[in-house]
Each structure stands twice: as C-alpha cells, then as structure tokens.
Amino acid sequence: MPESAQLYDYCLPLLDGREQCLRDFAGQVLLIVNTASLCGFTPQYAGLQKLYQTYGSRGFSVLAFPCNQFAHQEPGSAEAIGDTCHGRFAVTFPVFAKVEVNGPGATPLFQYLKSALPGWFGPRITWNFTKFLVDRQGRPHRRFAPRVAPEKIAPAIEELLRRPA
Image 1 (cartoon, rainbow, N blue to C red):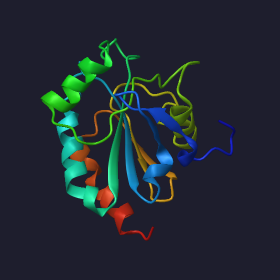
Image 2: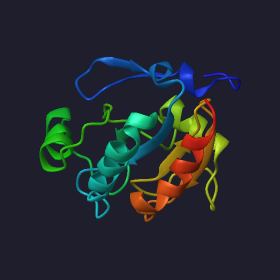
Image 3: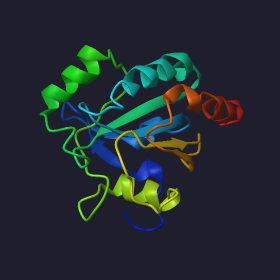
C-alpha cells in the first residue's frame, strides 16, 4: 500500500477464506491482534472475547490475525486454528487467515500499523498477542505489548468509545 494508505484500504481473507474488507468496520473502535494457538499468551483469547462481548454493542470489535513467526506457535491449518479460537475459547469476533507481521512477507496491514505505532524497540513486533487499538476514524491510537492482558486495555477502549464517531 502507498504511504497514503489508510486502515480501511485493506481487505484480507478470513479463516474460512472469505475476503473481509476493513472498511466494513468503519466507525468502530478496533483492537487488532496477532495471535497464536500454542503460545503462553493464548489464554488471552478469553479476555479478548470478554472485551468483545462487553463493548461490541457500543461499536467495538476485536480482529485476530494468527501468525506463525514466533517460535512456530501457530503451525496448524485454518481448521486447527478455528478449533482453538471457536472451540476452545468460544471466540465470536473475526479471525483472519494466517499472516506474517514482520519481514519482507509482512502483510501490508501490519506494515501500516507498525509504521503508525512503533513499539519501544522499534516497529518490529516482538511476540504473539501484540495489540493495536484503532479509533473510530481508523487511526491507530495505541500499541500494547503482548504481556498486557486484555482487561487492562478496557479503559483505553472506553475512552475511545466515548468520543464521537
């Protein structure tokens, strides 16, 4: 994507192969997360689901992007990822097809997010469950490290939900 790209310019495949355009989430507060099924942080899916249930009716969504770039903790097929997300954690928010978030194969969405919100040690994502909070206008607002539990993000979500669309 060109430098003038905006969040809503991206369309990516969901876990089931259907394409999902982020413009469909325009006007919502989003939490975009790179995830993995075999990570010590995988139980965060439960916290992410709770955020989605708590704030979804107010215009909030979680978007999960499985990634196998960190210690090969997402090696499975789309079906195996779905079993973890939908079966084990009863996730109802959108789960996308596996992506790369770093390096030359990084999906343009994550290139955009990392450029807009570099972390403490530069733009590179360092581990699974890095979280990007995006405001209702599609502007990246804040980046959260993997160890930040979803419930700790609730105040920032509430702040953005209080702002006019």
